[in-house]
Image (cartoon, rainbow, N blue to C red):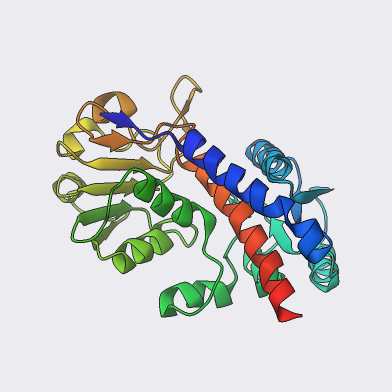
Length: 284
Ligand code: GUN
């Protein structure tokens, strides 16, 4: 079994970006600028937003973190986003999810300028992925594809199984695997006899949001296992959607939690920020 070191792969990606960004002041007169908005104090969001700021620093990207109170009215948040859309010095706008319940995530996502949508969540960018037209790729699915590539795993002709059908991970990663010529099966909470399906997988991507739901008996020897989960076990310890101890001995390669997919998401966010910046330069 090989441990897939997302931390290391993301670090080399960020190093490459840092070299590229260092050339921007001379070429374009400034560096890219990412604005991250956090509403409220969700503990996971506090950590994620801090990690995004750290990654910006590592890449030489300017970062502004806006923290708004939990009771910020939806209209006020949307106005704030429109201001950022109109601000020419801002290249990327990200609103950390989840949002407080009184705010519509759909409205927020639609309000972000699609050309500044570094998350790749805007309907225009989602459509671009499905229609193969130019778009921002969602960061976690893109990060998973990069992990596979770095490990020398070509999805072409392989049987890939994805568990989870969210807009953020399951659906787009299934589409990307399909475009990479894998044969893809998409499972979810209503899937009957899931172990029978997962045992067919040569690549298994688990984004179900349930601690340790994939166990060793569900995986065939030689499978490449990508664990997108970020959960707590019964002792409150951080774990993934995959029961690492029973699955790892069977897997050809597996991502740890933490240190697998998570760092790749952020590295892809940095890439998207640079891409939004460059798109703007060529538009001028
Ligand atoms: N919350 C968890 N993951 C993400 C992400 O990739 N982007 C945003 N905006 N919020 C998240």
